[in-house]
Amino acid sequence: MSLPEISVTTLNEWLEKDDVLLIDVREQAEWDQARLPQALLLPLSSFDPLAIPDANGKPTVIMCRSGRRSADATQVAMMTGRTPVYNLAGGILAWQAAGLPMIGQAT
Image (cartoon, rainbow, N blue to C red; front, side, top):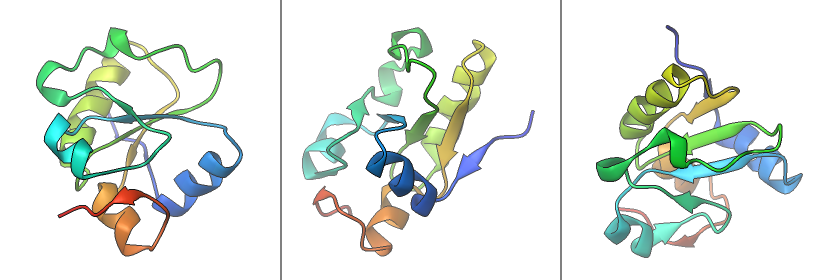
């Protein structure tokens, strides 16, 4: 199963149009340090794809720090039949490197 990914540029466009459900699978301490205000925190340590709210037809994007944990969560979500769902390539580090708006600083 290939993993669908999107870039930070695409995510930013979707966020500007309010056309995406964004899930952050980092842990609470990481979230407290830096986050995207539109994201919903569902840490990977207790991740349940059935806890993802209904996206009302919008795509779901899953993100983490670098894209590795979110890739795992994206695969799990896909296995439960959630579509469309995408992994954010490069995670919050790529978002920050692109200079896109966020709360705090990721390390």
